[in-house]
Length: 237
Image 1 (cartoon, rainbow, N blue to C red):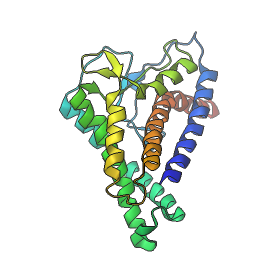
Image 2: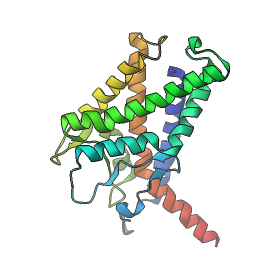
Image 3: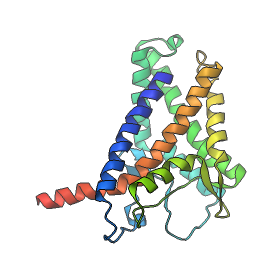
């Protein structure tokens, strides 16, 4: 399982670097910034659930506990999530991760259920349960261009796993990210019997937080990539 997460994290990180580079190339201060609210899609890149993204340039409005759980549910049960769970389960199956799960259809099924469980539990812990407990806002407040450089936006995005908004609109350490992922890893020990040691748990925690950080980068720069794609398509016509 650790190998799978490392592979996925590296792939996401590579894409993020490409996104950042392209965004910096297109970042012209003289241009009027696009309104982030109009660019927020349900899915970034067509597959990455984008329900917890908000306009970071609009006046802050807190959300309720119910809304936090709605965000967690949408991020957990969006259609692409089931496909991605199958992809990760397939990689684990090929690597024979946790051999006790077996091979064949039964082995794949065991891995698929656990892969999907990782996503659902992680989302609800970091986006609903702990944000409600600590009165933190689980949303990612997208900056958009608005006079900011690509480097500034990249730094902002990756550090949101450390800093978050509170329900009162202030900023503080992101307890929900750390403790939520920590709880998710602890729970996963119940259904990953062969990776319960300290090293495996620490690796899973670090990779989950790292993946969340890169996910923020992808969400931040997706509107730039989308705009560029549309511009190229329009130019061809």
